[in-house]
Picture (tube, one colour):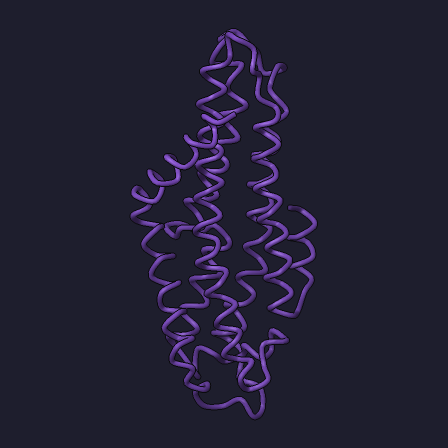
Length: 235
């Protein structure tokens, strides 16, 4: 996750930046899977471990579902820029707020959701993953109840690393917003972008799901929990 975020931080190609951020998100999910591997499955821990595994798998499924929404939406916005041979550099996003205010606002929402800013669905998904990892770390404390700080489970540090990496990612996502809203369009890029109605409709669908699963995530979380129950129960 750290390599993906640092690589994205140094990238000036928005597509490449999104690709590197996908590496970082894969790292978040691998951290959660690693946490499951660290669970204590001894008889006295079995119930607490099952609950922790269920929380992590639920978070992973939810994260995968909502990640598709806002990551696809961001790539679709860049695909519209491709119609005028843009989208390869951050400069091609310059002045997008003047040319296409709604499209720029939508792209900014996708960026903030990727960064995990509340109340968007990206925040909910990252929070669920972190809470799941913390729940794994608390299994021994829950069962034994007499552990000290020196006995802290190493899984805690995965959650901390995820928080730090999420903070790093905010910088390069905000950079996209800065270019769109405060930079001037490149020469020859004045005026609205090509129509692309079907693409714009798909972007709108991604936007609505990104917003809805941020403020009304309960139903999707319940579905993800049912799927996680089936997976965990099969172990």
